[in-house]
Image 1: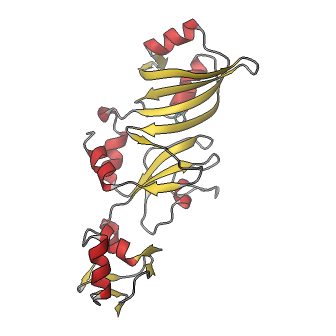
Image 2 (image 1 turned 60 degrees about the horizontal axis):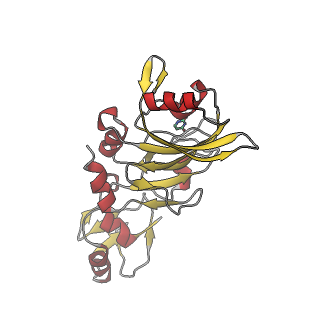
Image 3 (image 1 turned 30 degrees about the vertical axis):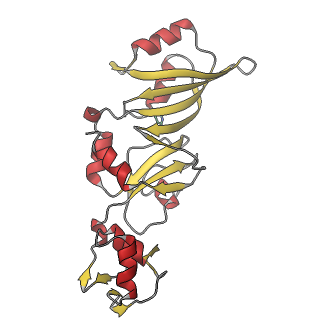
Length: 237
Ligand code: URA
C-alpha cells in the first residue's frame, strides 16, 4: 500500500505537493470515488484517476536499494518457498532484482521494474564496478597478492580485479577480511576467485555498486533511490 499523493507523484503527473493540492481540490478519484483527504493509501489493484485520466501503474518506474540478509533468494519467486528479496520491499509494483547475490551473501542489491536500467547495470560493456567484503580462510601471501594483481583465470577467462585491500587479519583464527572490487558478473565469481587462491570465502557481503553504498541500512532494510541517483546510474552507460 502506498500513499495516494506518492502514487500520483511517482507517475510523473505532479509533484508531491501539487498532488496533495489535487487531492484536496477533489480532482482525484480512487475506484471511481472522489478522495479529498490526505493519507489515504492505495494498492496496485486500485484504479487511480487524476482529473479524469487513469494512472498506468505499470509505467511508473520504481528503484529500491536493499541490504539483503543471509538466507534470502535473489529472485522474484522461489519454488521451495524460501524468502526472496522481493518479499522485503513493500510495494505493489512488480519489481525484480538487478543481478543476483548468492543465498548466503548479504548486502547491496537493487530492485526495479525498469528493464532498461537493469540491462545497463548488468551488461559487461558498461563495466559497472561492484565492491565486496570477503572474509576468507587464511592469510594472503605475496604470491596470492601478485595473482590478484595480475587477475585470476576462471574457466579460461581472466577476471580483472579492479582493486583490493586487506582490511584486517586475524592471526589467531587465521582469517582475513578483504575488500575487492570487480566488474565481472559471473555467478559466484568472488567465491571462485578466492577458491582458486585456496582461501575459501567464509562470509561475503556486497557494499557498493558504482557510487551506491549500503550506508546505514541494516540487514533487511531498504530505501528508494533518489531521482538524482537514477539519473547518475543512467549516465554510466
Ligand atoms: N560473488 C559471489 O561469489 N557471490 C555473490 O553473491 C556475488 C559475487
